[in-house]
Length: 231
Figure 1 (cartoon, rainbow, N blue to C red):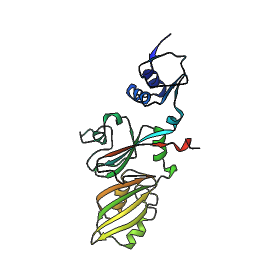
Figure 2: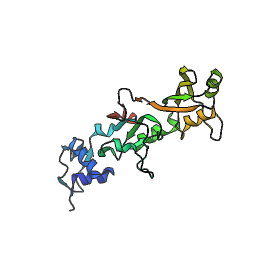
Figure 3: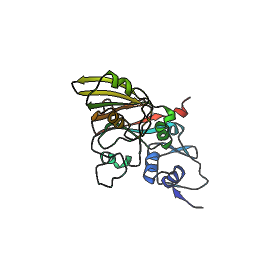
Figure 4: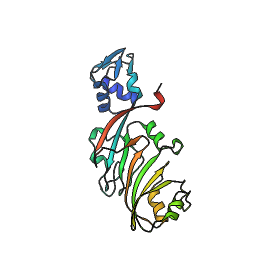
């Protein structure tokens, strides 16, 4: 009967790398034939019953990254520019980013190894709120503010954002944008429609996650309980 190491079997069952499987086993998340097993390299056979610990199945791995300006939200870049993964240890390089921030934008970027959670967070149907602080330059008044809070029609149709004026000093203004979806360059395009030049764009929250207390270009690792598994 064919024997395999436990780490290889776990990687095959869960479609993850061997290294990830080793970590899961060492962190006491694998049960073999009803017994907790922490040795990645023991031999197992097809008739052995291998299970993920029930509490582990409910957990979703999350990284909250305070993305700096001047790096790409991508796995690679043809122009050889800095990418977000350059700021993270290799053990997180398989994580997926949830929504993008463009090269000149900064702030909250959520990353996860759970594709279902990624799809949920990104879907417009989920109505997960994204909040941004945007520094703009140009003429701004109450009429523009009211117009920006309506559904905006241009080459691309944008659903009604929620925009507030946070601070104003002559022709420099700080706006707070709330969006329920994240179309490519949406805020920059809206500001351009209203003849406002974006100097700084920073996402400060995405759903219940925020970058409060996370230093610039640093990250925080955390686990959350899947909403689908809460009792």
